[in-house]
Image 1 (cartoon, rainbow over the protein chains, first blue to last red):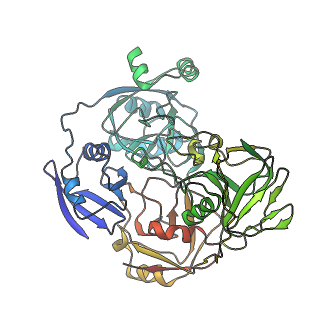
Image 2: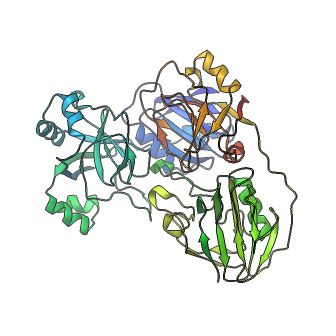
Image 3: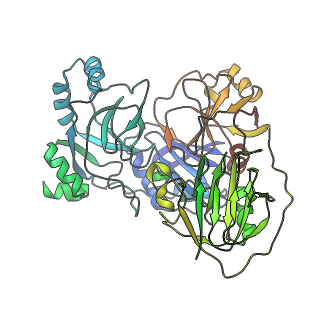
Amino acid sequence: MSTSLQINSIDFELQVFDRDFILMKPLEALNDLHLIGKAIYKENLQFVEEVICTETEICLKLNEKFTTDSIETLQAVNPTTNSIAREYKLPILINRESSDWAEIESVSGLTSNQYIQQVLSSSFMVSMLGFLPGFLYMKGLEKHLHIPRKKTPSKKVKRGSIGIGGPYLGLYSLESPGGWNIIGETPLKILNTTALPLLDLEPGDKIKLKEISQQTFSALENNPITIEEYNGLL
Amino acid sequence: MGSCKIIKPGLLSTIQDSGRKGLRYYALPASGYLDTEAAHLAHMLVGNKKESALIECNYIGPTIEFNSQAYLALTGADMQWAINKEPIQLNTTHAINPGDVLSSKIALDGIRAYIAINGTLSGNRHFGSASTYLPAGLGCNNGTALQKGEIIMWDEHSEKPALISIKKENKQSELIRIKRGPEYTLLTEKSKTALIEAHYLVTTDSNRMGARLDGEELETTRSLQASVATLPGFIQLPPSGKPIVVLQDGQTTGGYPRIAYIPEEELSLFNQLAFRKPFRFQLIN
């Protein structure tokens, strides 16, 4: 079943898959879909078991409490539109030995040093969380810096790794297999597995990378602090 | 406090409960039982609440020595369970004495089995759940699979369970019911037919995150431009044309077309399909 819905004068196509799940797709591309996703998540709607928000859709997993009146409840969700984006510096130790530089240099036509300088001067915004806990997708790379993901993913990417995948800068909070081109590593841990919120960063947060030395990296790795605390020290 | 010692861990034995729901927003999957019905039956037989923690075994079961008296039940796949080498019944409450050894072999039907013990298993809870989620090290047992020599402990309930035996045939379905997914219409006409007519099988290259299927390769008319949401049961189609079913520990977003999905109530049946056993999909909407 497909119907329509309006939240904050934004029009959505609403695709209802039986009583299993709903997809909400904005009719026009939206930069801050995450604000609506967050509002729905915070609302703790009785008939919703899970909320997933990507850049193009919001997915709601339904439970047995879903009724025909539920859509009206969904429509009444009121996102705050005037929230001020938080801005953070994310420390990175550039990995000049990464085996991925050959690919980055060949695709971008830049030397690794030129590429690093341009990434360090770029402004990013966290655009999405997924596919594993603590994986951040950040937008803001200019087109000539886009590097396709590897055809054959690496078996093991270290926790804290920062890489380029297509148009995104990505951060791996967990060790996992992965196909992104690794440029460096952050010593900060933004994933908390013992308390909510699970992550110290959220969609909408503005990020700039800050290059750090091996010495600073080791100091931060041995004395873990949050990104909030790190930025307070700068 | 009751306890037992893992003599052999089996292929992959983990502690699971009904999972940590509601955290996919942060890209954390719920985890939890792969065969919910079998897990609920095991808990019922030993007098536990149905959302409690138990041991989930995959394909080859463990060998466990009990240090204390216990009531336990084995459900799901028939892993040729025995106590002190004497074969014992599935789907039955068993009273165990200190020193007894529970052993098992390869699964004869299905691939997931459950060991429920009367009581509450000790160990960490993350966001209220004991379910083991290996990628982030969450759940009881420090988020790891059971290891040789490990001790499992529990607080037994004050009330003893009735000794019950249930007659139940393990269903090995050759037909898995599916519904059209968000990107079903991207399938070519030929692939729409193949999806429901061709035989597929679950490969051994599968885990709690996803089941990789082998069978006729499917095609879509285009690929996706952006990452989309995924839930357990979603059938994704990667460029290889061989579908992948997202399971309980599966990723929360993905870049592949979601051609169909196995509804939640059908997922237990799918999760019991033996490796490499041919089955077909049946479209029900």
